[in-house]
Image (cartoon, rainbow, N blue to C red):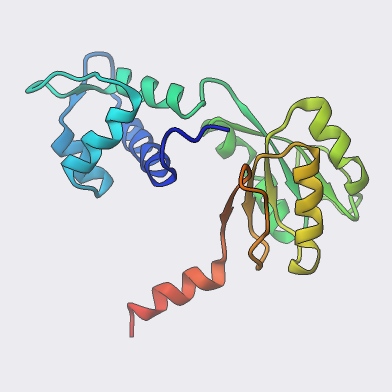
Length: 205
């Protein structure tokens, strides 16, 4: 697992990459660090420091070539090809994410399969295959999958997480309402919608 670039820096590199996608309008287009920083909502010094983790490029006074910088960020983030992901828990939230297949593909990710305790209860408009949980470990090993999206109840999340880690998963996007306990080599991003809404509500009082 890559550890040379700090986690917060990796997040900002992803942000810069998406900002560049809005600026791409053909070969030869350039953007200054000040403009890109403003679009991304960071300070120019922070942006230049972050981009320095990807190598030295860009010309002082001329800025960055948009297409070249976008390609460099894609290479650094390991997004030159579709990254396979599995989804565990094909309930309401899981099914909604599965229906976003084309959106994930545009961002460089492919949901290779989903797993659920009741795989037959699947939506007709979901293209990804849905298998029983018992097949999860073998599928991960055989297909070399390293990432998983977890959309299961909190009561079973840790157990399933343990199985994912044992089968070789190295990164988990966790929608379950608990903090998962994982080895140091495994990365977890938690998405708790209730906490996010509570955070927003503080600013509208």
